[in-house]
Image (cartoon, rainbow, N blue to C red; front, side, top):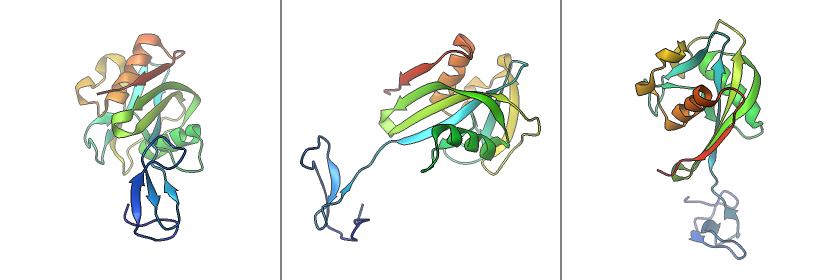
Amino acid sequence: MNFCSNCGSSRIVKKVPEGDTHPRLVCEDCGDIHYTNPNVVTGVLPFNDNDEILLCKRAIEPRSGFWTLPAGFLENGESIEEGALRETREEACLEVSEIKLFTMISVPRINQIYSFFIGKIVNDDFGPTPESSEVKLFKINELPWDDLAFRTVRLTIEQYLNHGKDSFSNKVLDD
C-alpha cells in the first residue's frame, strides 16, 4: 500500500496498533488502520439424479484448461449462498436448488477460505461462459481426477463420493 485510502497520505507504516496483536498497515497522518483479511471463495458442487457431477473447464487463469466446480470470490453485500448461486450462473449458466453448505476449507498459506455447497441441477441448458471453455456432466467413474484445477475441488468431490450429500466437512490445508 502506497497511499492511505482514507486521507491520501503516503506515510503508511506496518506496526502493531495499540490493543491489537497483529502487524497492520497504519497511516501515520490520520491513524487509519488498513486491515487485510482472507478472501472467501464460494461455489457449488452441482449434481443430478443420474449420479453425475457438473464441472467447468477453466478459461481463465489460474489453472486455465483444468476442471473445477463453479466457484469464485464472494462480493461485498452478498450472502455466501447468493455468491455461490451467482458464481454457478456466471461460470456454467446453471441453476441449482436445495443448496446446503457442504465443505469449508481454510487455506491460510494463500489467505483464502473456500465454502462449497451442494445443489441439485435444475436446468439442462447449461453451457460455457467467458470464464469456462467447457461445461460437462461427469459420471462418477469418469471424473477427470488428474485434470482438476484445485485441491479444494478434489477434497470437496471426495467428500461427496465418500460420505454422501448429507455430510459436512471442515478442513485446513497447511501445505
